[in-house]
Image (cartoon, rainbow, N blue to C red; front, top):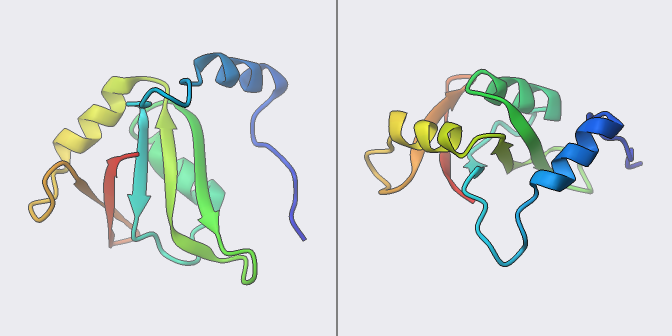
Length: 113
């Protein structure tokens, strides 16, 4: 069964709606994260990314059948500079424009969403 809960308070949810970028514009604060451990939880994912800066949204894409991570997710930082710093600080030598960050000693691809 799917739980319909949000980790955000009502005030935070209102603030999140205010900072949302229109669908026709690219949100430069949002990053795609691929190669996640299949047993990663939403909480672990969010806590991991909070070490880099304040987050407005984070989600791990989950398989509806198994309830396990599909191996990727998205994180949106409050400040565009935080996302840019991650991409610049951990460049992936094999993929231009992507970063490589270790989560639980597993290399994860990070790139603009």
